[in-house]
Length: 103
View (cartoon, rainbow, N blue to C red):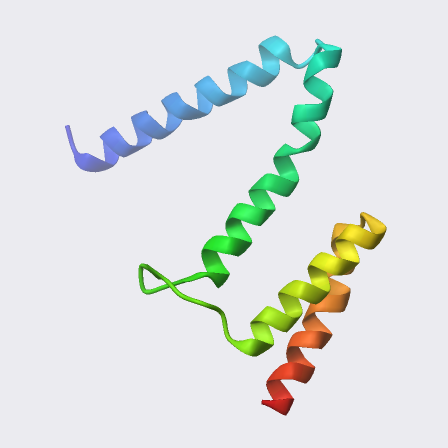
């Protein structure tokens, strides 16, 4: 059996397993006690991705540059104040550009 056939078989198998969850459980609603934890999944995932990008370089933990730190603080303050995640980009990116130009 060739390697490509194995890769295709494994890919098809994982696709079937993932799709089966939507097919089997898609019409059911989640219990009420899962609403709060599920609401926190997206912010936790975004925070994990951002922190891994900003605070690690070359496999080691490092302190971010001043421009990155200013953008992080500005974006965090915007989200805490308004609750709108997209506003973090609208505030953080211009702050990053300005701080990069000044430094």
